[in-house]
Length: 187
Image: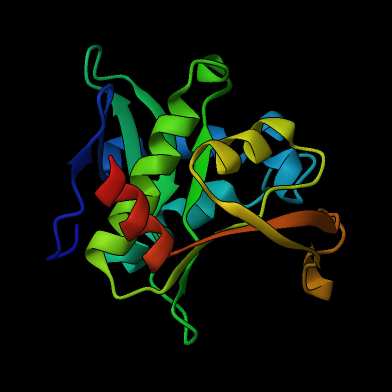
């Protein structure tokens, strides 16, 4: 755990830093082809079991691995990350949901909260999402959170990873701090 508390709630979810007890759950997400195919790992991440403990030890504050769990059942439903702003002031949060919870609106709820938390907890100027062009659910999630489409791109992996990855054609969505503040003021 880091010195910075990254706990927050949505109407149905509590988000907290990942703990040792979450390791198997996170590995199950990262190794699940259904979860990882749209982010360039069609068979899942082959080294997930080794990477999770390292990421849990290295991450802190905005870069810590987070777990979203049902406030009602206390069951983990996904893993997410806020992400610290880059040199241009851009945050790129991330969500991986357990397929058992797809289609229930948790992604939209969590994504909206990650946008809010990115602006509330950092000096970022922009929050960006880059869903795979083939991931209609993620595209709808970006749009439902008030993000605007600003372009497209292609993500590739380093040569040493290419035997178990595929390039990802993605759409770029963004919301600026000013747009976010304006929307919050109207709410």
